[in-house]
Image 1 (tube, rainbow, N blue to C red):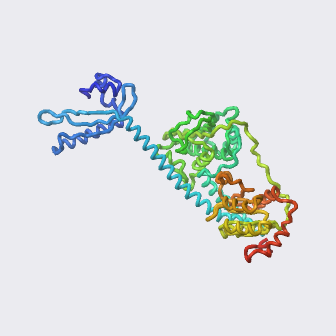
Image 2 (image 1 turned 45 degrees about the vertical axis):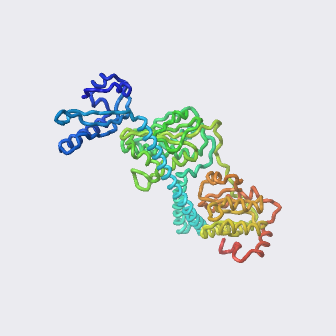
Image 3 (image 1 turned 90 degrees about the horizontal axis):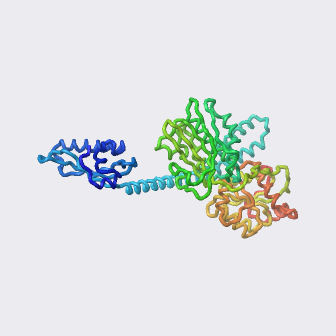
Length: 530
């Protein structure tokens, strides 16, 4: 119990001296601080019993105490023993000062340090994942292209054809893994258009219901329509699916209820606690909010940040890219996600996307006809620094009936184009190359011929690639790696349909160019290459 309190306590605690003195010690501070105070007292009494301790010693501790109105605040207390005439400890003298501002500053410093650590870790992961994805997609291009060529030379009724088809399917799944890595980096954003967030969620329900365990039921709270956001509808469906799968797995084997809702909120309504990306801040626009709530196992505080780390999972090893990929999509869209969770009480995930002031648009793609035919002997300049990728792409182009000139990089490609651009109809250039990248190569080609038809090829998402072009006008088309034979065919037919001049006779120009090319630079279509 207290026996004396200084009049200064009225300012600190908002209570009179008598109220402070009469208050039990255990009620004056938080349970954690009370246990800490008891431990310090026990340690000092044990030291006192040794008889060797300095009787004038002091001990300073930080405690979280309560004001009269119940508000918690931090104090720094310097403690010493009160002694009788024989030097025996008969009480404790404490001198306290309010350190709430200092603790708040320390908490803010730690918060910023935590954000900085997360950003550094994210940046490191981004560089690693981008490098892996680039090299992975290049090698995968060789596999996918080689399989396409092999399958075109094998009858469908042959036994080996079924094996090749399975290998192609495995290659497609491998490509999806690479795409997921780039999505985590915010480098896969898809074709953005104005979509009704509520409509996308409603349309996704039948598939979610069909996939969910029978023990799981759904509750929904949707507005009649809206809000409208700028996004790729398929990616929004993937985000919702990942959150729902996460929710039903958190529900365990017992019966569970998952609530899905859509709302529109003001920036001030977005919680800053457990908000990701950690460096995200709202602007003055309104936000569409997609909510998925469960009553499952929840997440402990220490693990919340790990939820969005690649391949972190408490389930089967090798999983754990659903939430990181979701975060990557939000990075690309300027949105965020918040997590509210408590152990054994469930979780609520809220996804926020900026509201678009407009009406939903038509998102149906306009397919390119595969039946249109173009003249033979079309000249293609193929620029890629990877030997195997270049060779496979050459074989694929020849299989489609095109003539091919190969270059090992941007500088060599520009030199060849400068000498023979009259005989080249289309240039296909890789984006990521040493010395001179695809954008720099595009600028060099246009310096020779402003009307040059250039296809940029990359394992990155088209939207991300176009954003990186800066002031340079976009290429004639984009071809994502790894691409199949039909993807290459469709892309070529598209650019030829849009840019080919009917008066030109590419076959004659190519034949003339053959006489001027150095040995080995021009690889004419042959029986072996078709």
